[in-house]
Length: 235
Image 1 (cartoon, rainbow, N blue to C red):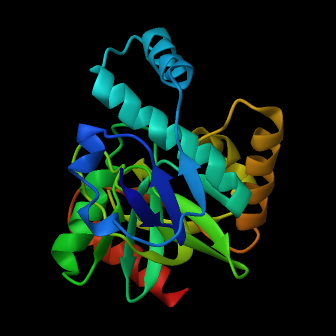
Image 2: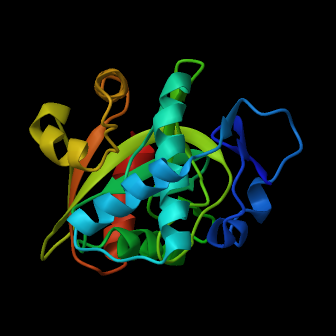
């Protein structure tokens, strides 16, 4: 069974999942694990029940694949980490996380960055881990990276969270975190257990005291990436 190294942690995954196995080449390690992922059938059945409630129907292997990550996303709270839905990229050693409701164009916008700035690193296109380490929040790649499977096994300092909104022209401004808290919390994995849920809120609140938040009104022209990069890199 694979041992994965990501977000600065080693995870011993006791599941031979075919979907995960296809995506973990860059995450494999032989180091001693920090924790073990060994789910009983009831945990996976809860994942399937949640899918049914949301009118989703996935193959059993994909449900297991998601259940494994749900377990990791909860367990990693013990190490000051949490899962945040968004598209995370890095340029010049700085990571930026783009968040928005589904269908707004997160993946399209980060694709524009990769086209305009060829040195852009795709950290994770869907479900990056955010982890506080040595007093700094890092955006971390994982092999759970959405339908495009775009990810890199790196952990880099998170220097900005950008809320995307459709606009006819391209304009970015820094905003107070409290003005976009509802949207931000909708993008964060929130465990069902009370203690874990409260720990998540504490971590996110702490992150927002040091990581700036922006709102980017944009169209899908390459100018959108230029406008965003200019402000983010200068700050």
